[in-house]
Length: 81
Image 1 (spheres, one colour):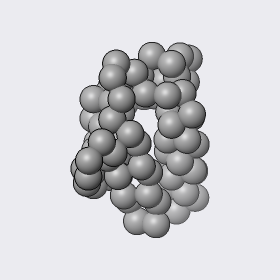
Image 2: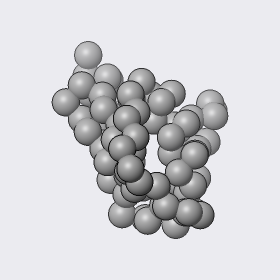
Image 3: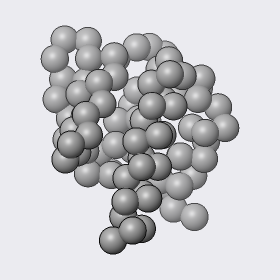
């Protein structure tokens, strides 16, 4: 199991315990580009765009679940090809 898979499993098990830095590292590993403007970071990958507010110490679970849904969608697209 890779580090990305372990991180995704941890995010799924407890979406309330995810730090911005961890999400940033995961999304950049997937190939998303990051743009920070003010207190929000926008990650883009093709047609996908995710805006996450920088919040300490943890992100809101809604943002984590949204990112997980997008990553699941991307992984299913990769498997179809």
